[in-house]
Length: 336
Image (cartoon, rainbow, N blue to C red):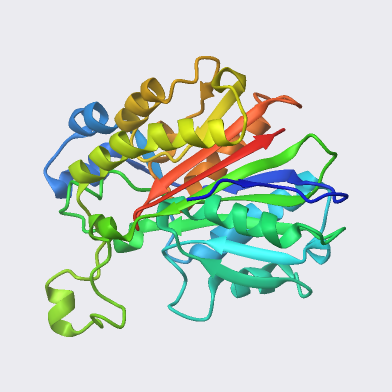
């Protein structure tokens, strides 16, 4: 639970050189997901703040979404795949159990010189991946990393489970990380895991503990499950205090934080979180109403939307905060 203050003496800090995202074309409304679950548009909107979400086409997998988002981030950074030394794909919905989805992204982009691997911290995955990439880049002058969060949750949802099927969408977001001038970039990060609460979010079947069988599939063990009330209580109890401690450990006055890019779990949860964080000058960025909860992709998708809308200016302080299965909480502080 230690806060990592980034950078090494004499080396340039790592920062974000470009952002990108991809949302599938298919738009899925509340009535579409609500009908099988026995609820309607108004019921979903009132409890989640979500109006619509995107679902991947039958021909699209996580690596396809991730590669497109990565390509757009490279384009914004003015770089090519040949300039990338590391690819980290944060996902809990990989194309296959193996090989790593990141290697498929590497091949799609033509980033033949890059080390590539996956990271699974569920909805916190992108922030965990960014912290991992920052450590990789430290002391490696001229190196660059492509960090991607991508998920296709529509493939693992039980259409009849109103606790989950109404919340999730598909998408991918990416950043290119590399050297930036001193005083900017990733200033600190903190990555927290609490396995005592690992039972709150998960997919019961399909791993070495419970391989998928005909009986397991009949029982629905292939579907994503979540104890929604317990997750909301966990976030309300832990996350605001963790953010305050993280900022204190980083030597940052909460009033200095200009932007918060949180995991887009649920619009009503974001309302509560924004009120409890105690960041009086911060804009809390949202995309949940348009795209739903896109898992590990939600933070980078929302960051890319803010960047491309010109809402984040050079020198401003940006807090990335995510929470998800494990339970996991990730925080990164970035000087833009």
